[in-house]
Image (cartoon, rainbow, N blue to C red):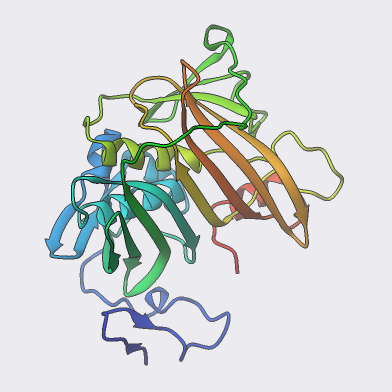
Length: 309
């Protein structure tokens, strides 16, 4: 039986390693399964509901029903929104670090429990646990900072592809432009650069725009154009980090560019950057993926919808 810490989090140490999540056999809630994938706009996904002082609930985009598990970028974005709702308005997110622990279910809402780790003179820190059926599916630390003046330096790759030469696409909540179709012969292409924008206007506040950046930062794979025998082009996200550089709007075109850094031991790390059409750097990111060799890409695609184990 699970213990519960004073902060309301579940202690799963009593479960044998590798055992199935408890909700698979013994649902915690009596709520009949039904879809929470009802949001038709990204802004609605980000508009989480406050249940208590530090407890929030999020629903999912309509595209969630087409996936075997929830999109990690959505969970991270909602977690950042929850953290930001407990922060003074003069402080804005400057970084987040998250771990994907379990698959998210589209037939359950996501509960977001916030711990107020610290509020200092210029920084505030929060820890957010995204929970379904009593299990933590995503754990995130986020930090917020007041605006301060300072010298600037930018050595992040800044190449911008021509938006007019891209192939048009749509991913329900997003407008997408890519150098080639995102799916060819049933296989994702994972281009190194994508132009993206919210299909609908987003709120003007910097927290919502940063959360939207977080949403798109988890798209694609930095290994999509790497051709090494035995190395998959993608896999489940293990952990994800975003550093917010300058406020840019995600309901206007932004370019996500990713590049591989290192792969080995069935894991791979890539980095990325998000810039607007003027080249302004909105965010930098890093992600570690699980890159276990599979027999065919169908198995790889299925694995990408599951968390590492």
